Length: 311
Image (cartoon, rainbow, N blue to C red):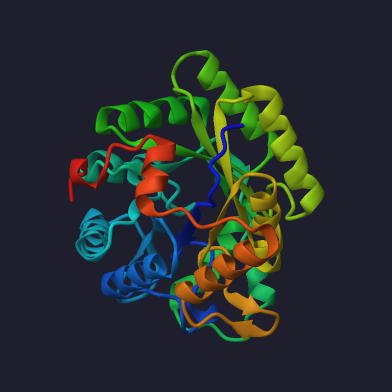
């Protein structure tokens, strides 16, 4: 495993997992999302992971103009790495999700390593009243929806990444996704060193438990040896414990309202920056590692630099 003596903190600002009725603090408009990203960078995040939403309804969107507005505003006010999603939402086609890469030519973007059942419908039992007409149908639809990321999809995505000079962050929701990544590395389609994002806690993927994270780390070590680095997403209440476990084991951490709406038990996070501040404090106290700056992160991950993007 490739290591850096400092911990990289990334922040996922809004995502497509949560609906606006779940928290009044979820950013919706391009300005709100960008402002959250800038504040998260000031709090210590060197990578800002972005989804966008319909500014009127809060529904997940693939609108390229919205992505550009968010990316341009973040870039204009800080030097964090802007990392668009190609995961989007389960209701979007692969072409919709991927279009942001050739459009913005970002330094880095997420790239899912396999298909899964992606069940958001348990949220229906956790929310008493929904504000938007689309929310119930959206959540209910996930009982019978597969989030598709086929081998052909992934191969086409990597071609887009290569054409844009964009490094993929390989999102792995289960152990089999690591073997998918190995398949593309062995075929020379994905270049090493790779950066993995272990995503734990999605209903349909591997559960958010420390022993499962340790198994993911061990499997990656067997498959990729010194040719990988990793970060961790812990969905829900396991966000901070799993991120700390990651950093203790030489990895990195992702926090943000995409993955978890709470700062601590029973207390909604008022902003993404609050979660970043807590993560930075825990990394310092629990692991003794310092936080990597955006430039240190770029150097470690081999990114092309902020001046080479198309926004």
